[in-house]
Length: 87
Image (cartoon, rainbow, N blue to C red; front, top):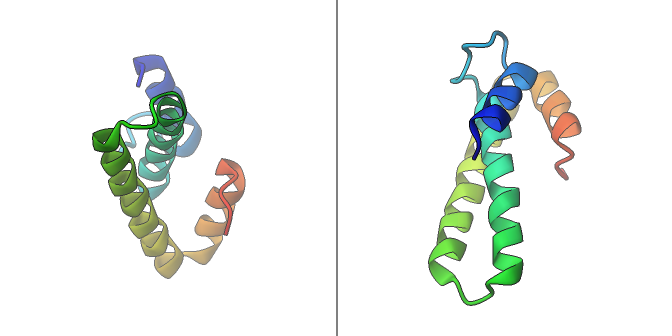
């Protein structure tokens, strides 16, 4: 992930420019990595190590989304709407 992309996501989803730990920022960064790995796997279908990494990232994002849903349902709904995630 490029530095500018990461910085833009942090500014867009964080509470302040130095906020890298909030669930919203973590989920946004994971979603960006997931989409890039998905594009990679469309070209390289037999790359099973990357596929395993992708599945681990999806699971981590799912756990963070469940955490956010349990803590604050409004922030969860806002985030999935902004990221365009199905749920």
